[in-house]
Image (cartoon, rainbow, N blue to C red; front, side, top):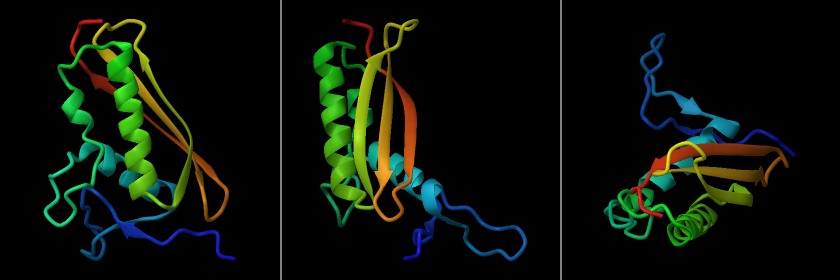
Length: 131
């Protein structure tokens, strides 16, 4: 069994300087790019896939409270599970930042189905200041 994952176009698009061809991401970088694309896309933003995306930017200016963090966690879990079949999520954590009241830290841990490897994607999201 081949443990390499199929290459996908890099996003954002990159051009290889040596030959002018589009760059392809492979393996874990490819998965991380796809997950980031899912999280950053608002549902309705893609013309032919109106349900695609998690819409994390919709939570900007929402209060940083347990309800909002649970909504973010659910959006991440549902969208990544639906749109990235190469991975199985092992955990999604959305925690308030200890130093900035309006910041949440999102940590996504996953297992790569094809080769059993694991990966992690961490990001921070600025919310409103209310708790």
